[in-house]
Image (cartoon, rainbow, N blue to C red; front, side):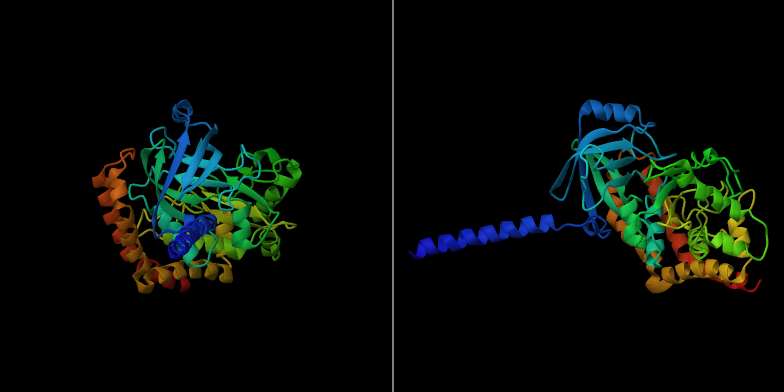
Length: 403
């Protein structure tokens, strides 16, 4: 009788453990995926012929079916395609994962899509990661990121960054707004926020809608045209009010101020006109805001001015910077980043933490386009930037306040 009782108790204990493990798997969230304190592992299973075609046609946005596995969770029939601009290649694929393209309504941890960044152009494999961490650290909306070892058909593809895709869910999580209009900006030429003209067709190639795609051109692009018209409008007493109705000026100057600290020469200010952002228009409003994206050119120039300029001025920034409170908004954003970086030596320590986390996986990555020595040199360079940049920015902010 006693043995039977112990057997029953033992079985109950095993069931309790299994139930606990099942519950743990079921309660995983996006926060677990974007836990940047651990190195994740993501596995994709793709038909070998599809994979060969994906590599061969990497310049095209062709989707292929696959299964994705992470921490025991398997998501079947996801859609995978090549992604990226200058980082696109068939050797170490940059990938976008769409969870509901083939299975309507399918989500993974509440997300409809995910980006696996190959970090192809960054020899340190951490510029993008550090940049977005700076945005979030001072309370700005920016995608979450973490690191993962990626396997395709059980073959190691290298170290990747898991990047939260900018979607309606992202906007709601970071701003609280729902139902607005989201656009991805595409660089076509050096564009400095001058006025392209009245024709709505001029705006379509630059601003790709990520929702509301079936709405009329006037609804999708009319407010964007009006935004740039007002930015370039008469320099009169109501310019700021007109522009402020079309874009959140304080948020815009904060965005540019953060990029000033990051020494990003491929953002809103820089040598190539505006670049690398999403544009969001709030629901039932004409007002827009920017969302940062693709900051892999951050921390390239340790001593560059926060007033980075290309061949000409970015119209909105120059006109806003001329107004004392908006100038201060810009300076304060750069200053907050520098102060945050110095607090408990955060930026220097973060570089060291990430190196420890990714070092072995970088060296094992045989698909990266640079050598392990290149990686070591870039890490050393970033260590110097992390140590020097905050104080340089604080000194420049102090000088600019005196002008």
